[in-house]
Structure formats: structure tokens, C-alpha cells
Length: 91
Image 1: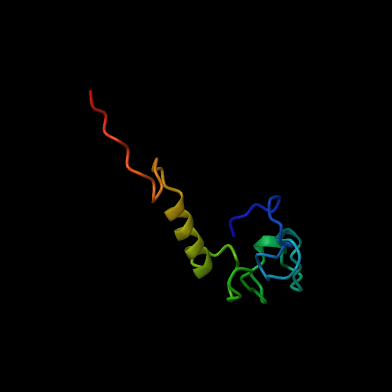
Image 2 (image 1 turned 135 degrees about the horizontal axis):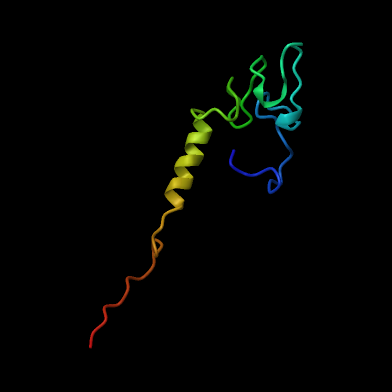
């Protein structure tokens, strides 16, 4: 989750079944299925945590951890932990 496919160095994995193909190419044996990312037929497997949900599931524990990590590292602070405090200006 989170890395655009064009920038990812790992092989593609389907967000529906976690197999080694792109999500847009997800096959389905159900004739009425539109296939691809809209498929909701088994087997559904998360490429992030191997649980029985799609990798795009907002409640995926791995997605939650990544979001939490990203929120903690993407602050607007002008200093980072360990930086020396700014010196006070005196005249």
C-alpha cells in the first residue's frame, strides 16, 4: 500500500487476490463478474497481510500501521528530534 506502481521496485501483486499480476488484470471464474478491482468473489486475499480482504480495505491492520507511521513522520515541524535549540537573539 502506498507506493505508486510506477515507483515500486517490487513485482506487482493483485489487490484482490494477492497473486502476481496487476489488479486491473485480476481474473474471475464468475461469468457475470466485471473482473479487475471490482471483483468481490473468492479467493480474496490482502497483498499486505494475507487476511481475507482486499489490500485496499481501510481497516487492514498493515494499512493502519503504515498510515500511523506516515502521520508520525510527516510533521510540519521545522526541527527534528536531536536538533539543537535555536539561540536567543540578544542586542
